[in-house]
Length: 259
Image 1: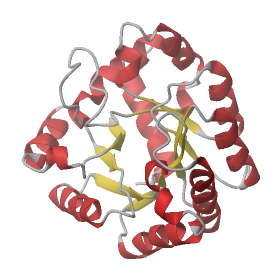
Image 2 (image 1 turned 60 degrees about the vertical axis):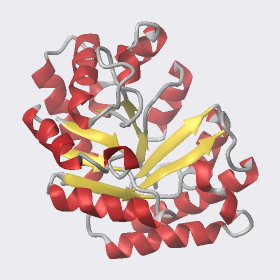
Image 3 (image 1 turned 90 degrees about the vertical axis):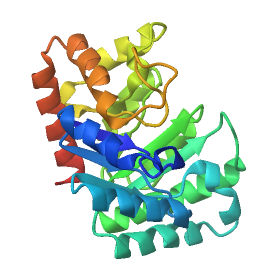
Image 4 (image 1 turned 180 degrees about the horizontal axis):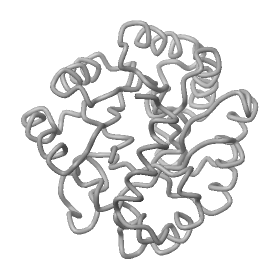
């Protein structure tokens, strides 16, 4: 069982990261992908500490759409930060999270699109997969991925909360689809229906912690150990037992991100 998307470098874990990782291992986790923003030196340092604490931690490097504004007019600088992190950290397995967020609009949309496109180009050059964040920006997200080289790039739509059409478009691009604790929420029936239609061979599970704690932990700081609740729900949706779902999603993770 692997948590394919965790913000272990968040300040929320500064005081008890060791205990968080101990609970994850005790729950049966074999690995965690720690998402790191390459424009945040403090976050990179905390990610290094997490990886040093447990060798099951792998990392990413990317510039999140929320942080695209400083790179308006110079998106190659964002890609340059990511490339520098790739060169300095052998644990990096993906470029991300990157993408578009039109819900919060913390950065101008034009800057978001340019920074995203620059990082898609870097993914094509390096061969690394993308970890894609998209919120209320489906058409532009898919368009940039298609323009950046559909078929020549790969990755995952993380913390998927979209509709069936977006899931179909992600699969056509050759991407995986990752589900978080949202699928355990009582009001998420439509998302559970979408999750049931994504082939298990193309599915990942994640916490997106410290956010989105699954039922029955709602309202608390999320952590990797609780990916099990999401996995159990996913298994039920696909008519599998938890061990079968864990094996399938772990294979998918290794196929996409490597060991």
